[in-house]
Amino acid sequence: MAYFITDDCIDCNACEIDCPNNAIYAGGAPYELQGQEYPALHDTHTYIAYDKCTECVGYYDEPQCVIACPSEAIIKDPNHVESHEELLAKKEKLGTTLK
Ligand code: SF4
Image 1 (cartoon, rainbow, N blue to C red):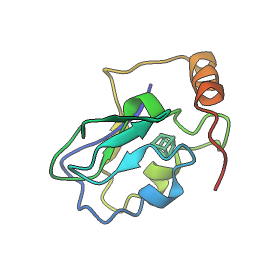
Image 2 (cartoon, rainbow, N blue to C red):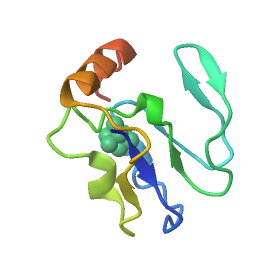
Image 3 (tube, helix red, strand yellow):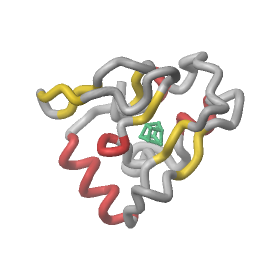
Image 4 (cartoon, rainbow, N blue to C red):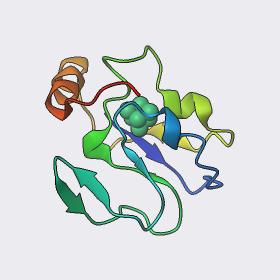
């Protein structure tokens, strides 16, 4: 399951720098995945590209964006449910590295 940023977001971008998968983007900005650009998933506030979010599996025990968010605006996305094993495989596929 990926995480999702709700409309409680105050657009402080505190979450963005902590994501090991570079899955967090400014509202309106397209996101990049394996050399391809995709349309923004939200126009007015920071968003998570769900196909790049591994819930921090493989990097941290807790989702770093949730910890960083001062307005409790980041929740599990019920529309993108994945098992631990699927998240680990996603992390390997993304091939991202800790900053
Ligand atoms: Fe990034 Fe982790 Fe938040 Fe997913 S849960 S968006 S991988 S910081």
